[in-house]
Image 1 (cartoon, rainbow, N blue to C red):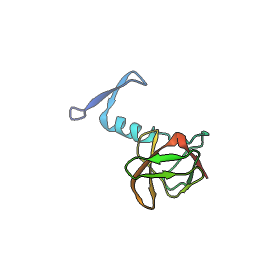
Image 2: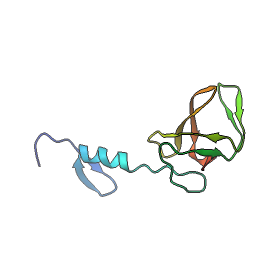
Image 3: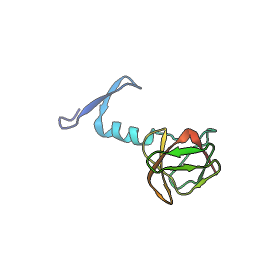
Image 4: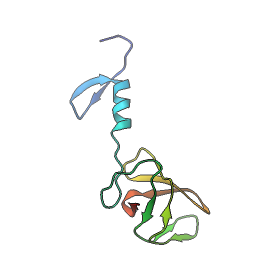
Length: 99
């Protein structure tokens, strides 16, 4: 063990590991899946599977609406999207299907 490394407890393995290794594991470990189980990645196109009312925008996105070029947020349930007229749109992965 080197004296200048910070160590954190990894609950999955039950061992103490360097903090840098834990951060790398956390970044690589998040899988975002759509409503039918397809793995989503940055830049994918998705289609809404349900009408969604957008809070604060006074608008409803209809089922079948195409959302282009999504971005993953690091949360397994949320994706960041751009849609005309709506800034900062975040959708739950359970309401979309990969195209």
